Amino acid sequence: MEKPEVVILLGGPASGKGTQAKVLAKRIGYTYFGTGDLMRAEVEKGSDLGNTMADLMNRGELVPDKLTIPIVINKLKELSGTNIVLDGFPRNLDQAEILQDVFPSEKFLVLNIDVSADELLKRMSSRRICEKCGNIITAKNDETVCEKCGGNLIQREDDKPEVLAKRIQSYEDQTKPIIAYYREKGLVRDIDGQPPIPDVTEEINKVL
Ligand code: AMP
Image (tube, rainbow, N blue to C red):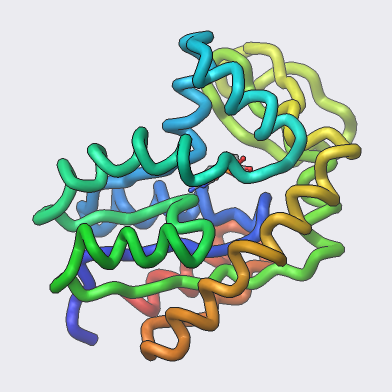
């Protein structure tokens, strides 16, 4: 396969797309760019914009384009001309068009990490993140301490049960149509995201 310059990971919340995007970028030497991380960094700053974003994210909603695009576009422009793995962008059709404008002649590959809604719910409700080192685990027995660094394991605000259904709904309504958009262009490779992380990584390795 001709090497793509832009690899997009698509998948529902807790589909493993973030983990896989980071592993893939490292392995193939591409720059990783995740908009969820970018937004969480803005939230950490405690700016007005960050507070507005936190509110939406904590409710399981997407951040509207009028807030998202200004913080994402400069970074994308900076990255044009380099090979990148995108995690969390685009998340709707307008964002897909914007991406096309910034990377008009680059070859795209879309990895669609496919996981059933039931499994997504199960994973999100047991996902814990280390406050200190960012390690993400699937809690089996309500673990509270990170085995890597001893930090506190916490549940992300937007992984709390009341928000989960909403996040899946946002994905179904706004992000899923992008799969059809890219499929029509012949750019999508479907990856079974149901098995454990290393198996999914291996399946991705076979594609590129
Ligand atoms: P993620 O870490 O990719 O699951 O993103 C966490 C949250 O950040 C999402 O549920 C959205 O609220 C917000 N977010 C991340 N990327 C985008 C985007 N491209 N457009 C709108 N909202 C986004």
